[in-house]
Length: 196
Image 1 (tube, one colour):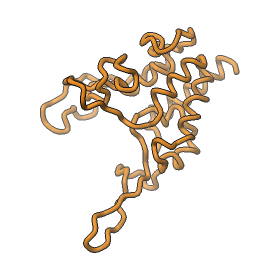
Image 2 (image 1 turned 90 degrees about the vertical axis):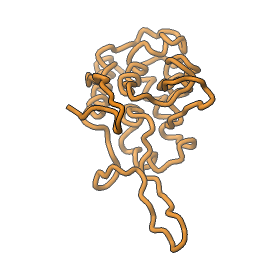
Image 3 (image 1 turned 135 degrees about the horizontal axis):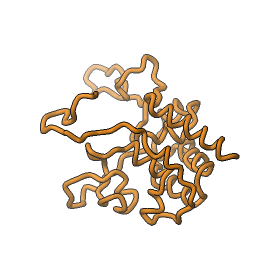
Image 4 (image 1 turned 180 degrees about the horizontal axis):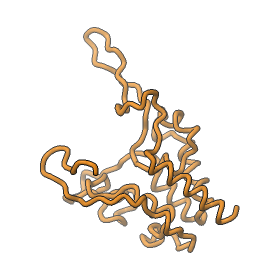
């Protein structure tokens, strides 16, 4: 596979991410769970139709044709996204870096260690053993999730954190979505400024 072909694949994945990712939902609604009609005297039950804990994971690593199946999958038993993280990464990165990406990004759930005595979240902190800031994990309002994810795939994030040797296969032009965030959060819900 030539570098031009690899860069083209990466650009296509990034373009899909920038345009808005994807949604397998009919009508494009924003509610990831659809309540089923409850029986009299019983609580509503829910049917999962979307699974998107970490922005950029499905959009970058997974074939679009797999999205509906994995959206309805149990996150800890989703062999499709697990294998596609590894196979897609190996097109660009060393086997060691690809395996770290798979280990950190699967399962596609947001993890947080509530026993940690910290005041801020640290995206992928739990999964990386604190390499991204703290062992708490979660996601802070100021975390640029897409750039962090793209930096891990196309940049030197994995080797800089000491999680795998540097494979010298970085593609710096693909490490950001170039969408700035001025971090002018407020103290009232929804805590972030209106989109520009």
